[in-house]
Length: 140
Image (cartoon, one colour):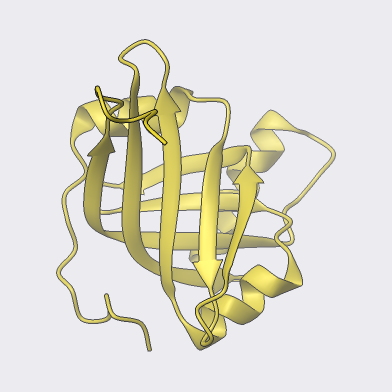
């Protein structure tokens, strides 16, 4: 089990939900029991509610295995207008059937009529960090 297990869910601010849904893609990162990171770009995403987001699509087998071994996940996205990035920390659950999967499937079918996702990852948000470049950001 990951370090965020048992953490309280966090309410996602409306501004961050709006940015999440309008950016072209996000980066989804997992790490298995050995802690080796695996990041993939995700184009199909949706805010499920005030405390969770969905990532919809075809994920690597490594991501699926990582979620079994360690469900602590991270999502990164960038708001070019505000020149800020965001890191969502949370608990990921992989769905291939059931109500959460159906929400993701319907979302994807509305966008891409001839395709259904292999799976849907539900992320219960436990923390959000704002990432901003600063004077020392590019120092080597």
